[in-house]
Image 1 (cartoon, rainbow over the protein chains, first blue to last red):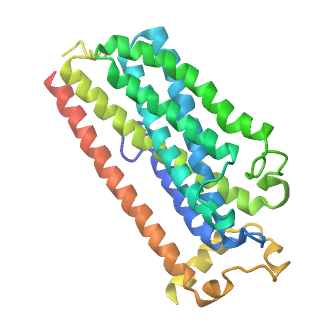
Image 2 (image 1 turned 60 degrees about the vertical axis):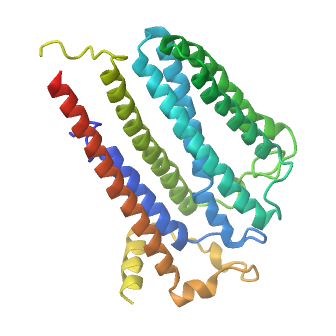
Image 3 (image 1 turned 30 degrees about the horizontal axis):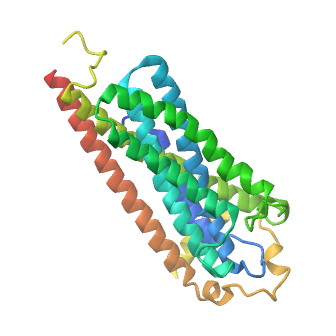
Length: 234
Length: 76
């Protein structure tokens, strides 16, 4: 079994297999014929996984913030910040792809839809996290304060994206009394492609993040910020 | 068309259930002609090439970082 740091680790390649499957079948598979949506329903395979992946990365970041506060190991802080960063990249992609989709189905790039505004606010919360990190010079203090911030940011993000839009009126399926896609038009075939894309993008994002973490920790070791506890023999 | 054949076989392998949904309401505008022309396979090939390119690039990045880590560990 190859280790997780190998470029050919099974989950890295699986991610791409799933993405290629989703790309081929996403275009080729059958979709329901729905007015207004038309062929754009295929965006379901590419736009929605952005948010699923973002949520996973921010959850991992939140968990590692908690772990960091318990251990005080800067490595955990680095894992947390890099997952937050990847989460934000996926969030920006989700917003941009959503705007494109909205233009051709709802008629405008941006509406007063609570889910859109909530997503934008959530992005601002995490932007503030990044700015806060830059504002504190002391590494230990920076890691501690931003870990606490991150722990509070995640529940706020969840409430904004997943709970608030369901309470009010929203154009998004599954919100404000709208039935979700699954309720009437997501059949078994679509589900298979959709979840392949979701897992594929999650694995791709995780791979990119682990590369950033390894690079960051490598640099920190060089700077003497992180002392490797695994080597004492040499 | 070779591409068409390849994707035909691929989709046959992959498909376990083909829904009849697509035939139900023909009145809604879909890209039927685009599909009938076989031009959709061009799009799929382009997207697949991009994904494979990304994969190769990420593997090379991963290797590079692995090499840096190894070098550091050997030095210390």
